Length: 345
Image (tube, rainbow, N blue to C red; front, side):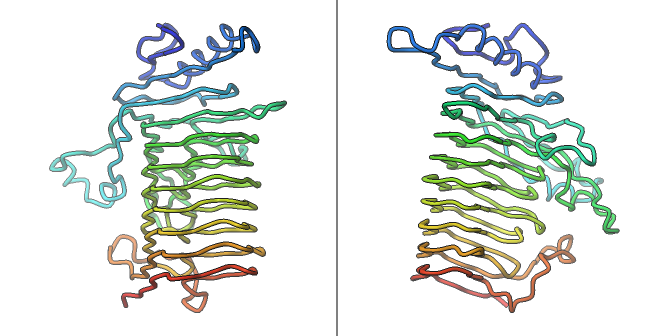
């Protein structure tokens, strides 16, 4: 059913959203493209559409491919609950837990990833478009993307659910884009939560991205974007926030908790701000500036270096010695001002 470019995945006539929401959303996008063909009529053209995901559990076996602008995919709840706590609780105690799985408008990523697959193969949402102009104004809002399980990493730990490895990504944006919005989302148990390339004016705001191998990765290059007011915590092998070759990036108001290999990792980033964040880590290298980062402001952040208190995770770390530093800076003309740095051991 459609109404003025509004789609409900549970009312669409092709596919079963509970068995494969990817098939359903791809069919809806095809319908939008068939109906919206004119680019310039009466000072208007292709308005895009909203795809609504009501609360529920929706398996995704088919990757969603997005190549149209002005698309908003929205749910009714980010649905986060800690899967790590549950997987590190004896199974005999699960019957006494109030909640077992994440909830809200929840997408269960059931894509099979094989060794040698391309980087984007395990992504629930794959965004790519060539030509001009860049794909613009796509929004993901208020639903959960759940990678379900991690797998054995082959390192002999016999501890698959704590490996942070499964080849799955929540949202993968491969081509240059403008004015994307990622807001109110929940990402959990994905090797990569959000991976983007060549972002311009992107807003990543008010999300819960945790228990992922890597949470936010801005790759390639980019400018004039913001990562604000998020709750973030990656695994010991990956990045909580990573940005590459960026200019004008604002990282502010985030609560970045353990146990990422780094809290904020910037590579070749210039004229950007990391301000008013709370960073809590169990490892050295909380803030890393490398590859000639320049003219950045690092101010009014709270850095708290702690020891891992939780027995299931005490055997893991990021492989760095304390001599590496809590803040590790390689660059020029960076200002590090009025930060609170505290160690609790």
